[in-house]
Image (cartoon, rainbow, N blue to C red; front, side, top):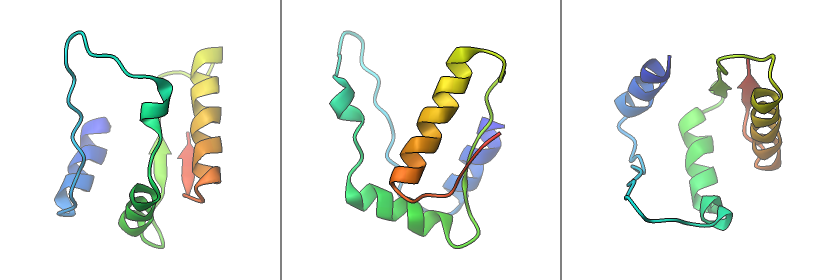
Length: 85
C-alpha cells in the first residue's frame, strides 16, 4: 500500500523531500517540525478532494492507536484532511 501511495505522489511531478539516513547521526524531536511552506505544499498537493491516509498494521495495540491519534492531531492543527483507517 505504501508503494502505491508513494507512486501516486511521485507521479504528480512534485518536488519530494527525500530523507537522508546516516549512520551515527542523531537529531532531536524539534527536527521533525514542518515549515509553513511545507504545509502549504501539502495542501496544494492534496487539492480539494485529496486527503492523507494512514493504514496501521493493527489497531488493537496502544502504540498504533497513539500514532494514529498523534497524526490526527497534527493534521487537525495544520488543517490538513486526514483519515486514520
